[in-house]
Each structure stands twice: as structure tokens, then as C-alpha cells.
Amino acid sequence: MFKAQRNSIMLLDEVYFWTATLKDWKTLLGDDEYKIIILDTLKELVSREKIIVYAFVIMPNHIHLVWEMKALNGKEMPHASFNKFTAHQFQKTLKLNDPELLNHFKVEETERKYRFWKRDSLAILMDSKEKVFQKIDYVHNNPLQEKWNLAETPESYKWSSAKFYEIGKDDFNFLTNIAEIF
Image (cartoon, rainbow, N blue to C red; front, side):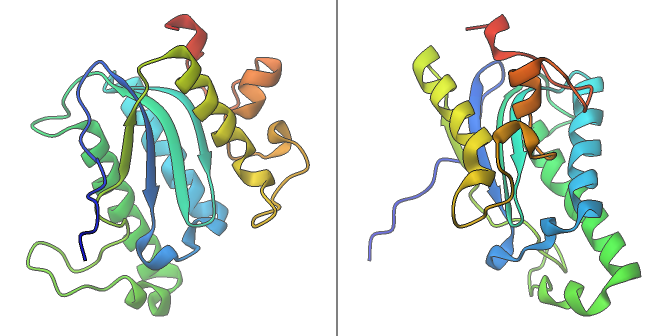
């Protein structure tokens, strides 16, 4: 009856663990084309100094990030810009490649025709070194969970920052090591 509200509010210059989930847990992100949209969007926001990305993983139906909002993107927070831009790109790509799947994301809302991301993303303030390293470990081990079984080791999963933390290789060119601030 009294469902708890998820905290989706983030402030500038604070580090957060953030989870965004696709509507109805649809596994759209199982397709690499949609993962690349996410990576390109993160890279753009980093290059424009709107965010700092410390860790991430892209799962088939959700993403986890450890990141920091650095500056507004126009009048909105960067995470809102991230959601809007990725949703727009998903829509554009599905319209071309899979219009039937696009219909699954159709909604009857006044401000939009399609909804890709569930409302109320989870944002948890990383206010201690212990908490941030626990969440980064969780992010990197997510693909290994029995439910997913996407990789043998964290660093062998292509769509995360685990390799960056294991061997120092940033295949994405937008990561910052959390050790620089904690």
C-alpha cells in the first residue's frame, strides 16, 4: 500500500551510484547497437565536462553507473540529458530496424510518445570510500551473476569499466579512476 519512493535526485559535485532500468525490463540492451548509443552519450557528456564517469556496466535491461554530475546541460541535470538523448536514439534506431519492438515502448503521455527508461532511477550518494568501492565491485561483478552469466571474469565483460580497474586499460576513453578522489 505504501510503496517507498526511490531516490532519483542527484546534486552537482557529488558521486552517486545510479541505476537506470528499461521500461518493463525489456532486454533492448542485449543488442550491441544500443550499448554503443549509451557509450557515445556518456563520452559526449564527459567531453563537454558535464559528468565524470568512474565506473559502469551495461546489462541487457539496465545500467549501473558510479558518476558525478559536474555542470548543468543547459537548464537540466546531465542525467536527464542522458535519458532524453539515449531514448531519442533508441527510438530513431528502432524506427529503422525494428518498428514492432518500438511499439512496445509506446505510451499514452502528453509529453512523449515513447518511454524507454523507467521513472525514478535509483541514485545513492557515495559518501564513504567503503561504500563507493563496494558499489564498484557490485557493478563489475553484475555480469557474472548466475541470472546473467555474461562473462567468466569481470574484466572479460566488454561493456563495463572492470578492465580499466583490473589492468588500467580504458577502452572507452572517458573513465576516471575513483582513487583520484577517494
